[in-house]
Image 1 (cartoon, helix red, strand yellow):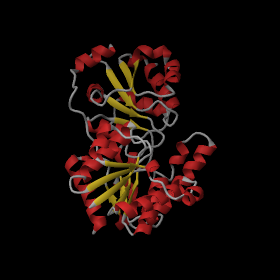
Image 2 (image 1 turned 45 degrees about the horizontal axis):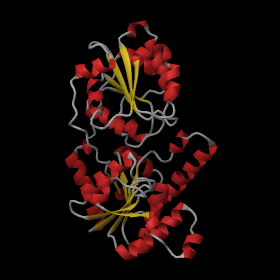
Image 3 (image 1 turned 135 degrees about the vertical axis):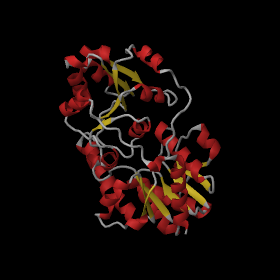
Image 4 (image 1 turned 60 degrees about the vertical axis):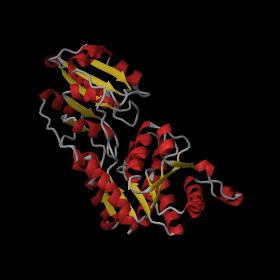
Length: 369
């Protein structure tokens, strides 16, 4: 069977590169896989799969003049390419309102089964954007085009069972849905001794570490992060508490300025290679996740994998389905950290490599039958 994976335009970004490669590797065990869409791919994707960029698919001039929006451009290119390459299944990896709709419509035109993935709480994610224009654009893509793509596609892949009820409530057939999370892997090399990690950060062996791994950008609750840190560290009983922030972004300097009085207890270590991330999870005592909107967050999965108690803001359906300690008020979050009564939630069974691999293969086999 020939499976065409329709991915993001910039598949060399770390998360998308991981997604394309891992899903492709699983499907390639029994199928022929082509990656369509990325303008730039990593060397390992280029070496492993046949890749076709949107720019390589040149429709006739009349279509180029008529199709000016992203969806119709992709539909025309997919239809032309599909007639030549004859895939058995079209699978949209992300962007359900653009790639998803293009795949669903192209599949109908070509008579090829189509699969789309619901990667976030799409009906509410527009609220996380800053500015009316950005909110409106995402609302139209997700709430209108995304909903249409799910109605037209032959199968809808969910990242978590919690997403199902919201889709059935708007009239989508539950029988067309299947829970198939993205594959995850955790680096096993690069393990350091806990003492050396603490020594490098100048944190005493008896001190508590609150870990956060996220982009320091406006789509996260940056002001809440600052308020939580200051609330906790201004408590005299918490002189032995440290916050370790892994990640970088446009708000890094803003955070540094707002917590400057507690800089000795706040460690902004920037982006870390995947081989180093497990060291931070192993040394931490709890995990703090202050996101405005998420799908199946790799950060949360990593925290659960390393059995850390998690406090999270409500970032969508999947977060609520996985994390028991959901708190939105910064003072209440600080109190939860201070009182240390945070349960450890279980790692989702569907992320077990063998179960996950079987789910992906089953999804493609089921659509073919």
